[in-house]
Length: 404
Image (cartoon, rainbow, N blue to C red; front, side, top):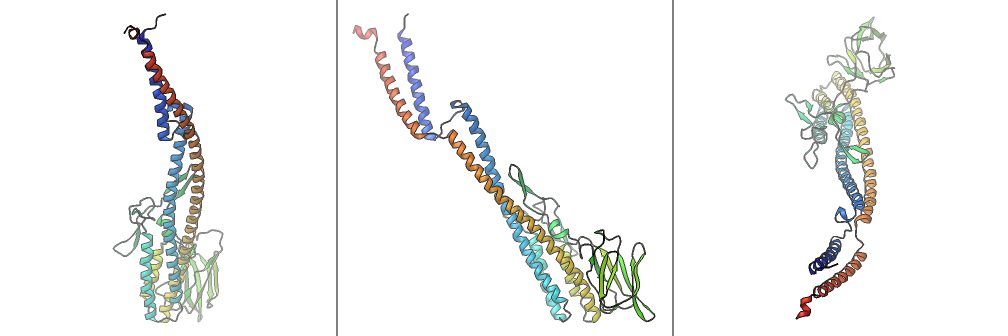
């Protein structure tokens, strides 16, 4: 068999290129500190690396979401805490205004502070985050949730949706509560009914907020409590406004005595007069701004007289009951925010643990053993040098060299 000079040269060149390729690959591994650079280096490991990198990217995104959710909920909790403190102050002012001692000038001072407090609550309801998004506008984050119309009424412009972020593969957490749920969706009075005294009443009767122990949480209809003189005695009658059914009375009025009907328990104190009217109305949704405005309006229209004080106390009694329900509602929302903050903290820690595990696994599969690679590079360089020397010697084994 004849082996030509060209064949030997080609074989030598191929061997040199192979050794050089091995050296270059090892040098690239040392430069990148990665064992698997191309999928062909280790197809099985390359599949694991791809999976682990995707998992790490997802976990890091979850934690970015958790950071955003944490920030949003902390901002909401701060705003709600501020509103709670303001409402407590309004509650104090309401109690002071109904003490029956303050003169008109003192009640005017309370009214002025209530107006300032109303502006504060409105400002907190329109809280924005660092991106300019409104916290309490539901999903319409660029729309200011509460504005004041031409008549002075506070109007809600958001929706009732709740925004969420996924903070782990199995957990989504809310990052907002709509203003409707926080400030608007509260039943006035005691939650079942609210009581009022008619503005035309001539006497000084004051009706309490009352209590309810009926089977149904809702009233069947509104009820009117009317007063009339009978044989020189003041009597009251309770009548269903829709049905016309007499639910209680006629009965002799006793100052502060309980009046019971249809699971409702109320009492009227003071000195009503014949023709006076008090009502028990089914509770309706009333936003916190309306509640505060009702207090302001009552103080603004105060007249120094027994009737004037009774009219004021009737409004204060009903509004204070509603105010307490607003405080309870906001406390309930704050409790939900606190639960969300705890969930975020838990999931964030879990994600960090999974990240550590995934990155460790990725390192085991992908990272280079530098000591082994350095040793291998030295060996490859020696082999390359030997191959180069051998190639030169073989190349010189030429018949023409011996003929010189």
